[in-house]
Image (cartoon, rainbow, N blue to C red; front, side):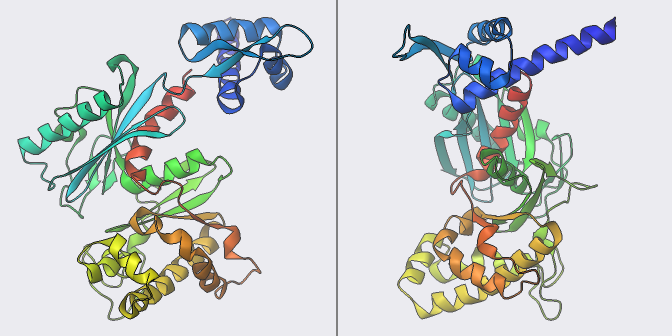
Length: 378
């Protein structure tokens, strides 16, 4: 009897989720639309719509115009019914975003602050940033699902501890320490995983992909069947430490030489413009000789990496991070270079994509983990 009861309950939950997701993706819709599209009975649809209305997840105040008779009630989903906040901490900034149930960034705040998790003032400012984002986005405390904290390091599977934080020397720091002044549910998320996850989450046509974060350091994430593959020890996707210059390569922050990080980090470009990447791409657009020389070298290494990733994973390759925000204009040339390595008659333009989120992908991705958890639990 218990097994039958559990099975029946699971069916009810599944039907509720199907109805909600259909409204979310196709609204406004009528009851009849749901009956036909989902092949459910009218009583089942009606019962679940009532549940979703009471939970304040959908709206039924509109009508669908029907030229043949009475206008039907239109059901639409409320994307601000629940919200999540994402924080991204870097060497010199802390960035906060508010994200709705569609994964859209509604509020973005970026504050300059040197990284120092041993400073109480820094931790308090992190807490104030969360409150600032919450209030600016007009999020009620009861509607805040949680705060995802994106960090430039590897994180334990339970989101509780930084297990490798060599970039900023914070290995071993815990969520409890970092979120000391954040009074909401929190979790730590590896920045590259967060950015890659939201790219695949937003584009449901991307089933399998490798996301490359081209920022001050290089990271990556592997998406398989819409899920992040972390590997056996949470190092899946760490493309930054793939050796690409086996002899006489530059020393990486990890201590080894010739890592991909040393040839494709953003600093290899913006070193020419005093750390201003936007200024670098302005010079590149003006065909500045030095900028063009740096870019040529950069594209060569990036093309090699993209080719190798495609051979290994046979999925989409998404280019994000600071450089990825500018890559769209140069995607055709990059694809041409990738095609020179091709062994299977493929064309890179069919699988190499520029990122959707050009700003604060890591912060937004950290928030989306809470959005996803909520949607799965409806």
